[in-house]
Amino acid sequence: MLLPHLASRLYGTPLLLARSKLDIILAVLGARIGWNESQTVLALPQARASPQSVGSNAAGIAVVPVHGSLVRRSMALDAHSGLTSYGEIASMLDEAVSDPAIAGILLDIDSPGGEAGGVFELSRKVRDINAIKPVWAVASDGAYSAAYAIASAASRVFVTETGGVGSIGVIAMHVDQSARDAKDGYRFTAISAGDLKNDLSPHEPINKAAMTRLQTEVDRLYSLFVEHVATMRGVDAKAIRATEAGLFFGPDAVRSGLADALASPSQALSEFSAYLSVQRVQKSAARVLSTTAGAMTATCISNQQEIHMNQDSASNPVSTGSADTAAEDDGKQPKVLPASVIPAAPSDPVVPATPATPVIAVPVDPVVASEQIAAASQAAASQAAALAARAEALTIAELCQLAGQSQRITGFLAQGATSAQVRHSLLASRAQSEEITSSIHPDAALKANPVNASDAGALMAAVKRLTQKS
Image (cartoon, rainbow, N blue to C red; front, top):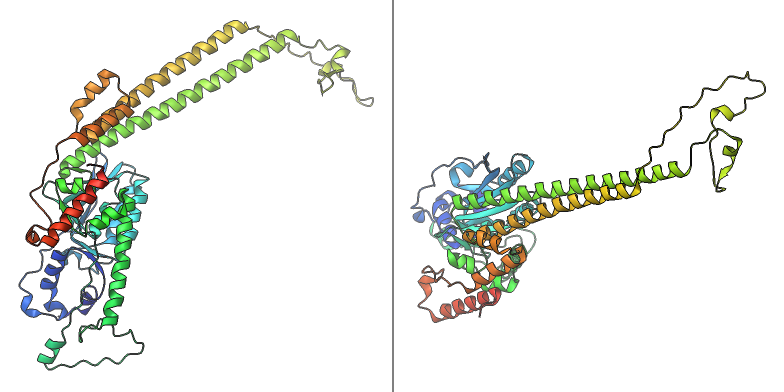
C-alpha cells in the first residue's frame, strides 16, 4: 500500500531533522511511498506506547517525554512509526500546568528532530509555561534540530555523558525519479495553471528557479531557528551560526553553551527536586515575612490611634450637656448635642430623655505606649532579619548545588559569605578549572579534509569568544 501523503512530508519541504535520521526514514518508508524499493532493507520500528505524563508524587515533578521523530500531526501513526506530534506534547504540558500537585516539569528528550511546522509555536509555549512552573530538559541521549529547539526553551538543559545536542540547521530533499519512470515505462506530464504549480515534482529534474525558491525558504527557516536558539539560550546568534549545524556530545555540549551541565535523567530529577525544595522554602519565608510586616504595621497604627484618641479624651472631657456644647469646634464641625438638650417640637409631647451612658476615658501614658511600639517594631525587625538570613543561606546552598560543588556549602556559611560573593567564587573556580577534551567529535569522519579542520578551528574560536576564555 503506497502512502503518498508521507512523501509530501519528506520531499520538497524543509525539515528540522538530523541527516542521519533522514536517511533511515527514507530507507524504511521508501517502498511505502513508491520510491527506491531496493533500499528498504530496514524493518519498521517496534510499536511503542503512546507517551504519557509521568508525575512524581514525592518531588512534584512531571516528566514529559519528547521521543522519536517530531511532526505537527501524527495522523494515528505514532505508535507504529516512532512519531510524536507537537500537539501531543502541548497537551501533556497543559495537563502538568493545571495539576496543582505538580511543581516543575522535566522534558525527557530523545529525538532526532522532525518537521519545521509547529515546532517554534511549541517552543514558545514551553517558555511561557516556564514563567508559571519551572521547566528543565535533559537530552537522554539526543536532542537534535527540532528537538533542540524545544529543549532550548527550558530554563536549564542537561545532557548525558554519551548524549548530544545541536544540529541547528534546516534541510530539504528533492527526489528525481524521472529515470526510474522511464525505465518502468512511465512518462508523467503535468497540466497546471501557474508557473510555480509543478515545482519540485519528483517525476522530472528540479529546475534552477525552483531550486532557488526552495533554498530561499530553507535560509529563512534557518535564520528563524538561529534567532530562536540565541534568544532562548541568551547567547550571540553569531555563535549559534558558527556551529554550522554540528553535533556536540557530552562536555563539548556544555562548553559550546548549548547545555548547562552533564547529568543522567535520575541526576537531573534529583537536582530538580532539590531546586524546587529550596524554592518552596524561599516562597514560604517571603510569605511569612510579608505577613509579619503587615501585622506589625497594623498593630503600630492601631496603637498610635489609641494613644491619640486617649490624649484627646483627657484634654477634652465629655460634654455635660451644657448649652456651650452647641457651639462649633474651632469654627469647623459642629458638635452633636446630647438627646437631653435637643428641644422637642412644639406639637410633640415632651418625652423625658434617657440619661446617656457616661464614656470613661482610660488615660494612657504616651511614654509607655511609645516604648511598647518600639519594642514591637524591634521584634518584627529581628524576625525579618532571621528570615532574610535563612533565605540567604538557602540561596547559597542552591548556587553550590547547581554548580555541582555541594561540598563547599558548609565553608561558605562558616565564612559568612554573601550570595553575591559565593556566585563570584563559583564562577571564578569554574573559569579556572581544567578543560576536558572530548574524544568524540561531530566531524571525526571528515578530519582528513583540511577544510573541515579549519572549520572546526573556527568553531572553537567562536565558542571561546562566547565563554570569554583566552
